[in-house]
Image 1 (cartoon, rainbow, N blue to C red):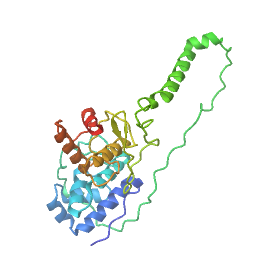
Image 2 (image 1 turned 30 degrees about the vertical axis):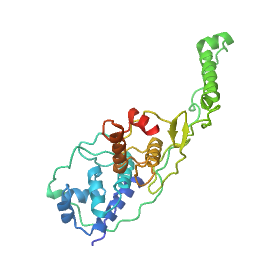
Image 3 (image 1 turned 135 degrees about the vertical axis):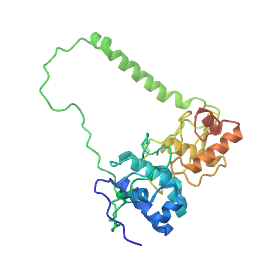
Image 4 (image 1 turned 90 degrees about the horizontal axis):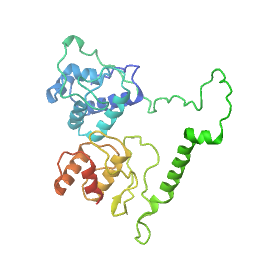
Length: 292
């Protein structure tokens, strides 16, 4: 099999990682571009553009290639979502949301745009894109003219009272709400949720801290009651839903925070059992049934 050509320099690590994984899957199938086109919904020229990093592949192309290679489509879709957020080249026709594809396979393109012979592909660095520094405070500039300090009563009238009220409410929420329902019931003192921002990482899975609070089940990652989740969401809410689905006997294969086909199938089985609309989308009614 001919070596792969180098990826375009403008691709960031996430996009390069997706293309590299797709190249490995194609190599695992042993299929040529012509044979790959015959086995999927996409043309030879389309596959050449996708696998040479010249165009973001649709999500359907990623799942079809994963199926041919016997790989996990959920993890490939999660990589696709991350790549779509930073892809700087052409997007799939009809794409409207980062990480999703258009309404169907893209049309054939003229043969003159066929990819050049493949060459060796250098390994992409497995590091996140650089993050711009955060500026704290006001930017440097001309000094502001001094103003007379207003009286204490004027400050309160202009907004100081709102700050005091907000602070009091924050204290009330912190000290009172977490303890509601715990006295004399043996329930948890509060609902434990994840504190840090969720970042999807391939091959990473999470533990579940199943506990009950005020008659509802929680898994220690999110306390949402109405978050809308569908393919391909990647949040702590997804981790929470996956934990509770597994706890209730709906197997999904791994708690990774990626709302893929396996999670959607488990949600549909739950919805069917509970007499809900079977659409595979987590919403308020499905959360209510899942946390009971």
